[in-house]
Amino acid sequence: MELRFRNNKIKEQCENPQRARLDFGSRMGNVLTLRVTELAAATSLLDIKSIPAARLHRLKGTREDEYAVDLVHPYRLVFRPILQKGVDIFDLESISIVRIEEVTDYHGKQKR
Image (cartoon, rainbow, N blue to C red; front, side):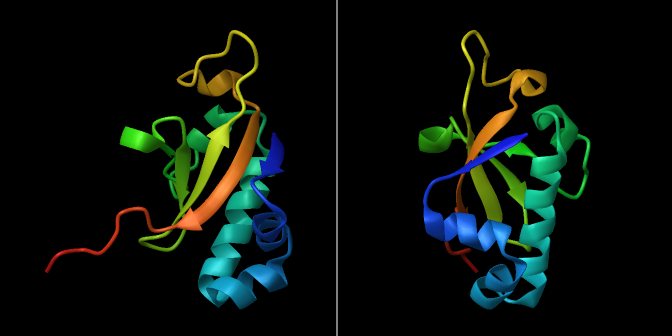
């Protein structure tokens, strides 16, 4: 799969394991590096769907044009498919280019 990045900072975090561990901690840095490696090795998002630990899911609301995979709870790696002409956002097998947007906890604070 072809990977693009929102900016140089996220590119460096995703492509440099040392930077990922420095910015996010050892455990999350390692998982981030693993997820990016899985994305790069995949032919399409359908391949990622078959990795249970990644838990690929489409986001909702104002982020409905994005997907995410799990990192270390509650953090996710969020990316946007770059759709080729005639490809639908639901057609995982045809999505082969994504732009990595961010590492985030988009759920906000949990109420206790």
